[in-house]
Image (cartoon, rainbow, N blue to C red; front, top):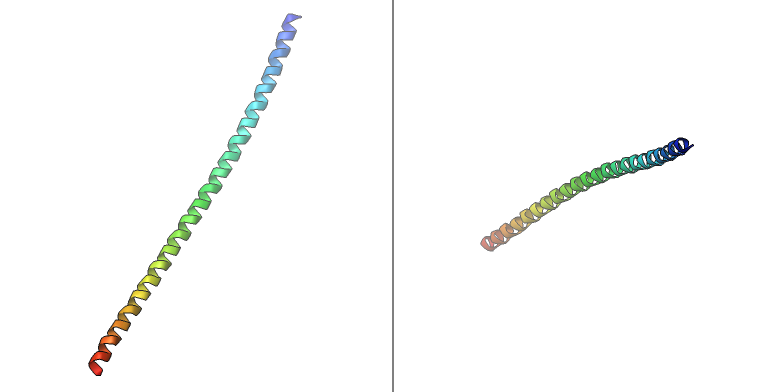
Length: 81
């Protein structure tokens, strides 16, 4: 009789541990998916930042070129007058 109760207790403990293991595996899988999603979003954000920085540099370069052209025109106008 005692042996059957011990076996029942062990079986119940095993069931509980198996459920906990399954739950832990599901949480780990979910965490892995979230990690992959965050890595994808980080990569996307880095690419967008790089693209924006390149656009800013191009605009600054064009602005600098325009300033140089205006300055040259001023000097040209001084000598023509």
